[in-house]
Each structure stands twice: as C-alpha cells, then as structure tokens.
Length: 347
Image (cartoon, rainbow, N blue to C red; front, side, top):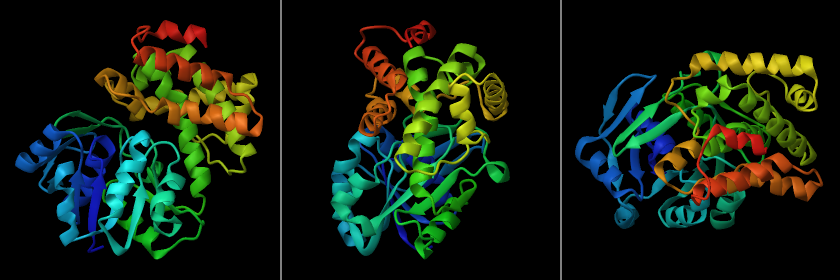
C-alpha cells in the first residue's frame, strides 16, 4: 500500500501480523510496553515460528518513550493490538501521531470500536477480526503460531467499516493482510465482532480457570458441553442486540442455540464439528486468556464473558454461566483457587 503502518501492541497478534506484513515489504513499526521484547526486536528482529514456518524479520521497533519520534513521519494506519483494558490510553497515544488521512484499526478481542471512536472519531475507525489465528508471544522477540493457517478453507481476517460499506481502505487492508493468511472485506462488522466474541467466550475463560490447552478443552466432553452452553447464551444476546451472526465452526448460530437448549441431534453435530477442529491445533496452543493466566498477567475476562453477561442484563437475557465463569477466572487470577479442570463442576 506504500503507507507507514504502526502496530501499537506488538505481542502475539500485533507482533505476528506486523512481522509478516513487514516481511511482505510494507513499512511497519512495532511499539510495545514490554522493554525486553522491543530491545530483542531492535537488535535481532522478530522471530516468527510455528505452523507457517520459521522467519526472522528485521523491522523498526519503538519503546513507549520513543513514540514521540513518530512526529517526523506520522502513521497512515495505526493498528491497536493491545489488551482491551489498554485500549483508551493506547489510542490516545496514537492519535497524536496519525497522518491527516490516517486511521485506526482495532485488531483486538472484544468490541472496542466505540471506545476508539470516542478518542479519534468514527470516521477514523476500522474494525478487523482475527478469527482462530492462534498465536503466542512466548518469549521476548519470539512469536509462535499454534494453529494451522485458514487458507481457502477458513477466512482468518475479516475487515469492515463501522457503517457497513466496502471502501477502498478496507480493500487495501484485505490485500495487506492476505500476506499473513486469508482475508476478506465484510459488510457485517458488528455481526462478525459478536460472532468472534462468542467464540472467545466459549474457550478463553475455560482455559484460564482450568489450565487446559485449546486441544485439551475440546477433547474433554465436559468442557465441550460448557462451551456449547456459553455459545447458546451469547448467540441469544447477540440476536437480541440486533446482530446478524455468522456460522461458528461451520455450524449456523441457531443450531448452537438448539444444542444449548438440549436438542440431542444438534448437540452431536456440534460436538463433531468441534472435534474436527483438532486437526488445525498443536498440542501447546491455548487461548489468549489462558496464556495470560500462565504468565501471571491480568486477563481480559471482563471484556469477554463479562461483556456478554453485562449485555445480557441490558436486553433482559440472563447469562448466568458467563457471569459464573467470569467470577471463577477472577478467583484464579487473585490466587484464591488453583486452575484445574474440576472448576468446571461449579458451572
């Protein structure tokens, strides 16, 4: 695209996507508050590994205290790839260093476009969903992908405007992201967002409170059935909010609701679809909230299952399993209980 691109947040997703875009020849700068990570990238490049091969990419990297240097060459595109709880300050920082026609792309979990728009204005916001990308910044300067690429079988990146029209900047982002994995423009950003939130809410909290990997969660029947219950509630709430949801693991949202309501045939079909997903997984991969728990970091649970429960209250649809799981993850975070599969028994 011939633009200056900044990734505010260069951990798992930001580092991996930014690294591959730079590898394709784009002008990319990575920014992150993890000093050792940025220093490693400055000195040795970012090392990308896993299911798409081994690559070391040399590119620009900045510590937070160096971001002011961007005033010389403002960013045309600023990807926000921080945790959801860091969205506002990260966006405020980037606002000062956007080119006049520059814009901000939320490449995050949860739904943060409105909070970004409150800072830079709706006209400068684009949404991007990375669906089942499976990446982990497992040590400074190193990011691994643990899921097989989606390719033609599954579209990983979905890029959309908040107003639903397909614009030239969305099409440009799709071309750029295609250097990483399959990408498409969507006229259904909000439906895609809620679909991704549903998928996140099905596994992130379970991994965080049990310590299980993505593969182990799917292999355990109890975890599969809790995931189905979580999906059913999230889908109901999404529909009540007016969103048009996409299929999840190739199964229409209505069938997930039926399974959550006890339809045995729907439940068997969905469990088969979940088990088929094992083929894309490595043994070590786990959702981001599970990764955060292992690293002793704050999780995004309040912006995942907690958000589903809060929105359920707004539309009068209780989501007790989401609320209980949110509480359970907080208990593990505070060290009040250990992460263990038996915690699912309380749900």
